[in-house]
Length: 345
Image (cartoon, rainbow, N blue to C red):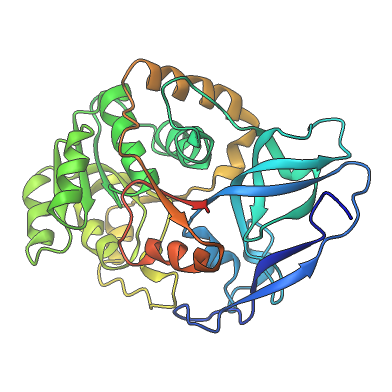
């Protein structure tokens, strides 16, 4: 009998969604594992990254040619970043027993090409063992290049960050205030608890978008407007912010979670882009991966120096394999604070 698994449970995309996720969107299947070929490894994911972008990769309405990453097609495993243990290897790069980070999926085991593994899982004494999925992974890199390359924040900058209690937003807040030293950093988050946490990270103020007065609160905090708006949510909050960005100001669009499940984008204030010549730029981390090494080095230094606080920045949820979709759905229910990570039981 083989000492290695020959089958794996897999969550596949059963019905590509065009609106909210339903009970029929995903299907739990058992699949045979192929034999390893040269340059391949058998991996067992231990932790999965939960990202709003996954919703866009599986969207049934999207032209695949317009996506920045391979789409998740009907019948395929749901793609996810993660940390995995190498169970068996026919790769010269990766050895059995190594913990690695890379692009994996919602499966118990899989045979993957060595190119799907990005690096050995990063370990820093005294820090989370899954920091490769948060501050030193796509989240930290997105915040880093968003702050320095897209927003070009400076000490005199007034910046507003939506989704400020989320993974990217909370990291942007810290880099903007404690590394760049921006004059004013305002977060937008949902609820007093999250707003208090955002302020504890360094934000000068945090506005609760669940408050009926949040639009007025933002206006009152920005008498001379914002230089930069770092947008993680889209929707109504983007519309509220359009008149609050200064002439020739910058809007960095990192996410649009308010619209990922098919909700229409209604922008009453879109004319502000014309009237005030606003600069809007999308942000995708894949454009900057050739400089990831320097970013990880800088981020690691800031963490060691205490400029980036990691405590509370990860929400790790112990999850049974059959509950993987439910944990991921917390992203769209406002259930997470910081980076949401699935820890497979």
